[in-house]
Length: 365
Ligand SMILES: Cc1ncc(COP(=O)(O)O)c(C=O)c1O
Image (tube, rainbow, N blue to C red; front, side, top):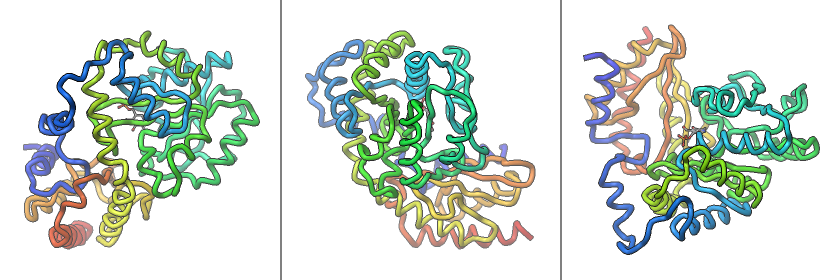
């Protein structure tokens, strides 16, 4: 069997998976729906108490006038960009070179909406106020991703965010948040969701990442913005006749996890320190600022996969299911801490990390 597949399967079958919130299976759905009254009626094409109550609740959490439930963040954010571009009659937006819209959406923004993108900053660092000030091009909207996932989940300091927000308001640039992992960064900022969101004109959050629902997203902003978003959702075919399985699971998962994000941050910091204690291993960021981080190795993926395969086979501790190549000489993987981390016996983790350190030392020779 191919090494990558062997690692994936050993991880899947192991006793202790370290990242994540646990399995995504029917059991999780049964748990989410167990306490819900069997007579509760479905939503219908975006209307009805199931969807509207959840949207109102999330609008309150985010401190925005109105929130709209979407089946995906991909749909929600392209629509947000379209609304701001139409409003300003300017079909250009700015974002990070590794923005989800730029690298993971098959150019939806360009092909479906004819919106041009201006890539701000070097791809290996965060966007700063100076980058925005030196934009050199009129844009309708600036999209900021909190945290910046593709560089390990780095995060601007809150003061920098405030300065960017003030500048955009002065210049008439709409500011949109890709807050796929917004709840995950609140313990670092020591702010409420609403305090962060008030710096932005529109906000997207994911309901299946740290929150742990099946799928889905919330797009929030002013009342007129949400009205437009609702119309665009219909145009995109995102207005399914019934979205209640997604909404009920999102609501259940949000309530279950809304107070756990500080523990996820602490877990991420503890785990990152363990990685950084191993020969040749470095996390990015060195000290995580959310529940996520990247783990880097100065060796090719083909040399790292056997190390993690040995660790999971010998200790039953699954640290990762995959290793990605950065280039021919280095590799990495991503970690997101969720409910799993707190359930792993500490001595098991220690055993896994002392073996990892040993194997890395040998592999580096
Ligand atoms: C930063 C970021 N933005 C947007 C999305 C899109 O979310 P969805 O999978 O709901 O389309 C993702 C998904 O991975 C993401 O990581």
